[in-house]
Image (cartoon, rainbow over all chains, first blue to last red; front, side):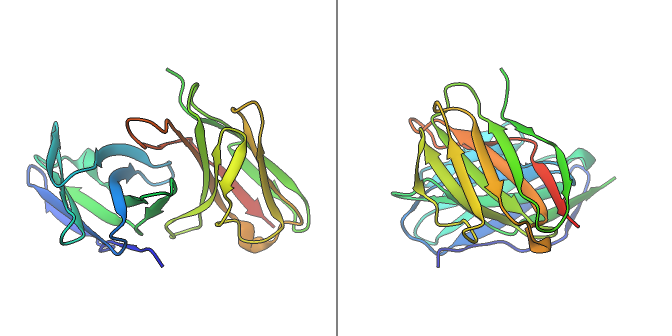
Length: 111
Length: 114
């Protein structure tokens, strides 16, 4: 059973701090990883994708992938109250196109 | 450009009735996916279309669930003889299957079976 694991949270950080969200996966064949943000009552919104080991930065967001450790993370710099949402980690396995999602981590940014 | 659209946005139906949910993917996206998200649960894969064919139906929970896609575009998910456990948000996503495999979600259909 291919799995993606996330701490459900809530992760509470003060405004302006760095939020660090983590994800582990069981399928070594997974090649691509994605972070989605989901506000309550809304559908998931893609915020980052990462395909190779290392860091990928986009604005205040940095995704990190370590395939040897089967670990993916998302850093949010200068966290804002508007970042408060559930963050979903998803992996795509080689040969398959469906995404396997973690249960999500709820992030709360307090002023 | 226009994103993924889904209709209806909300559907309330009585147990035992059939329902049809519609998804219109982003123009030019060849791949289309259906997922569902039950209250407080993660996203559960249902079915994947490449063009009009469905090479992966592994997530359909029972034979009451079926889906089709026509013209490589619009897809319909049909649930027959609905049960209360079918209540969930049904999400459709689409993607290009080259360069990246990023999936973009529609707003979802909230199905409530009474």
